Length: 177
Image (cartoon, rainbow, N blue to C red):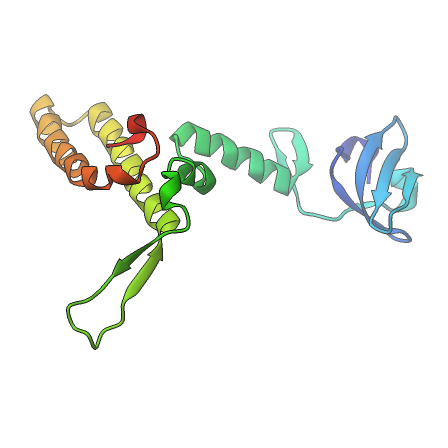
């Protein structure tokens, strides 16, 4: 493995020392923290060093696949305006944390369904986020007439209206429907 293909934080495999993480790079050697706790300076080409994880090469960029995928996903999530589940739960009112929604069927022979409020709340917020994306796509659609856009917007507005029932779950008023 050539020194140029190594990146700090990359996982590597050494034939004698096992797996480790690249901690530093010099012109001809790499400082590697091995899983056995020892840090060693290794010349990658002569030592038979290999990547210990899949690699991705994109437009001349060579870095660990995990890092590439994480960075790509973070950028995609930000671009789509989506939220991580933890950030959604932060919007849930404190009095609801640890609570559950309980659905009792009219037929006593059927089982009751319990859903943690954090899960239920996350699903409600995702419906809201998906409605927002749908609204943007309708407004930006080239082939829809203004009348068709207004008609579809009315349905979205009705959906938002139906979701106001769940405003009680939100911590902050500005996050509500």
